[in-house]
Amino acid sequence: MEEDTGLNILAITIFTITLSALLSPLLHFSPYIPAGITFVLLGLVTIDTLSWKNQGVNLLLNIFASEEQKQRIIYHEAGHFLTAYLSQIPVTGYTLTAWEAIKNNNSGLGGVIFDTSFLEKKSQDMREFNRLLDRFGVVLMAGIAGEKVIYNNSQGGEEDIKKFQEINRNITLTATNFQMKQRLAILQATTIIEQNKDAYLALVEAMKQRKSVTECQDIIAEYHQ
Image 1 (tube, helix red, strand yellow):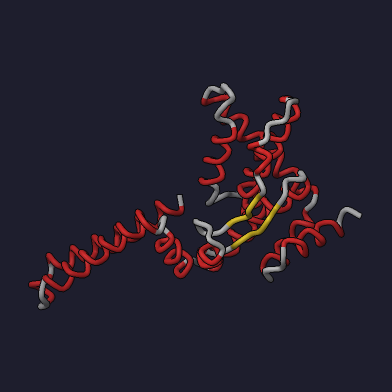
Image 2 (tube, rainbow, N blue to C red):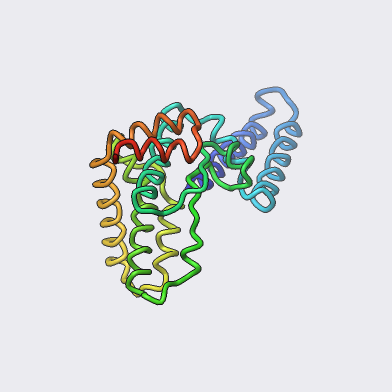
């Protein structure tokens, strides 16, 4: 997960500082300096984890992210946005960095925000409700699919998989069957993106410019007139 990656980065940093304390006699500086820095970092990590939901770590990840990683996020989120629009899952907003997410009172490194109120209002027609869940499952896997379409692999999507598991928690599935269901959702999302690739790439450019949800939806609609 992104959060685990951030914590691992800080853990490596703390290890490096601690090691420098052990080597301080050779480096000719007081061991209290790296020890003090380590103590402060540990305190900040604890506060960040318990009170800020790892947003501090996410901000650090954004600062040190490569250009490819930043671009991957956009392609990932555009996959969600495109499939949500085509699946008639309402999109209420999106963010592409941790700072944008914080400003919008969201957690994580950013993402497309869906109106998921339909999950709390089960239709009397359970078959229709399950079909809606299946469509939403495809939308959740579309970030992974979007990365694979462009980069032939995916580096993100752990939180999406968690949500996919959550919406399927009431369905009795073996681990193998769940993996098959997840792979099928990724395949369906990939097909949607590839069949609408011009709209997808235009959406990516619009999201890079931080166009509004309505403007992004209008861009997709232009390819379906």
